[in-house]
Image 1: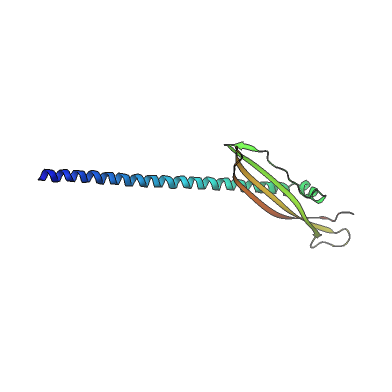
Image 2: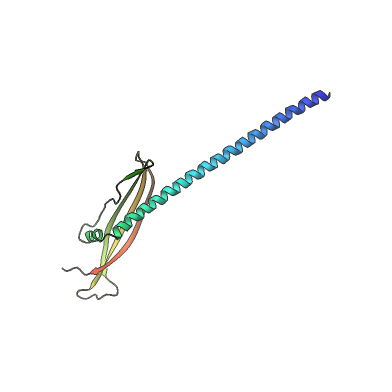
Length: 157
């Protein structure tokens, strides 16, 4: 009788060991899935950050180049010009575009509003940064708008 009890106990140990092995496998698969999802999220955040920085570069290019603003004043109201030639790195294409529009001309606060006074040119500057795969699928895009006041002598009529 003791021989059959011993055989039954060996079968229980085998089933318990298999159950523990299945449980540990499921825990490992869950941890791997979570790690993969976190990697995807961090990659997306990094790409979005680069797109934001590209859009800021476009705005900075316009604000640091008086010719763009002077062109907007003289009649070509909208300027759209890529600042970076498209560069390809690790299968991604980076591009930047920006435009400047003159919104209004008003008297400059604190300056004489009489003859030969100063005026304030108000601009709306838009920058767009984009990252796309080589097949054209956009993976990250950022759009920024910034206002700019440019105080200059009143134009001669």
